[in-house]
Image 1 (cartoon, helix red, strand yellow):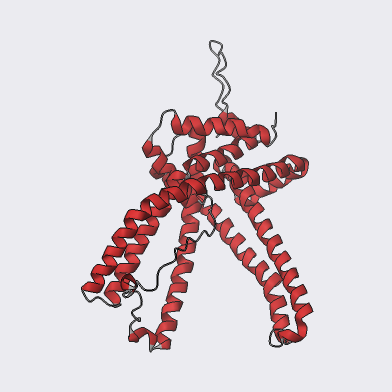
Image 2 (image 1 turned 135 degrees about the vertical axis):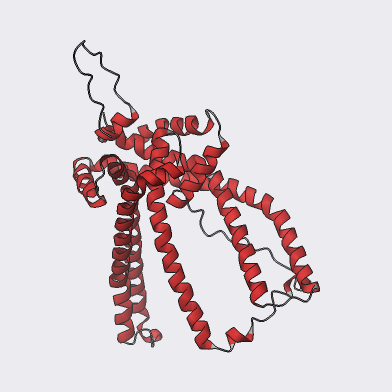
Length: 358
């Protein structure tokens, strides 16, 4: 029988505890952290910026940072524009690449939660085809979101500019305020809609794609019928998941900040020594020092992100398990995978019953 959203919390907690702690396997934690990070399951902790005031009289460690950039860049606007263009193209390429990787990792995470054993290489070889289907769906969703943003936000802003409201803002304060509020409401509604679609896709469409090899559009057609039949349960699920996500984000943020502070104290001391040493050696900003700073910062950032992913492993396991235990009673293929029926007694001379299709 279908269960309510609150009733799915207890089995999801029990599943996460058993998978992560009985027994505790550090390799599994590392794999789940890696898969959850690339699948986008690790929650965002918000833009928490910690600014420590510095005494302006002690500027020895800042001298290297205050050195101007090379004149080859600042004195050639065309070269600077080309560099910006290359960075934009590389950024778009990285977004597309990681979207594809995250699509495949979403199925590897689903398999790891159901089987309670995460295997990345085997899962990649098995799920890359269906992951490509999810990748195409996510690209279409991104393009549709961008188009909706242009229509809902770009067109009103362009109209305001064409009417001269932006150039003469003091003469149109009321119109700009009302228009800004309308644009803000449109933006919030658009973000909410896209967020709900993304959550419903990874929680309820991905299991269908994984177990029946259907496309994302086919999975959404079936899910839409189920939504119309049981609107209240799915709405309660979304609301409960928001509450759980907020609680988990706050708890994990506290633990992550403590871990980062414990790690950044020695790393910060090492960085100060490195900056002072570079200043004493007469280093200035040049292609070598810029590259060294970028590489060092990237390595430090990756270390911090992976530590945050390790801390978030309980949430990485709990939330997919929560969606699975809520959805399984409503989806027979997933239910038969979670709770396989007992083997029926066979009569001599009669062939055994065929297993349930995956």
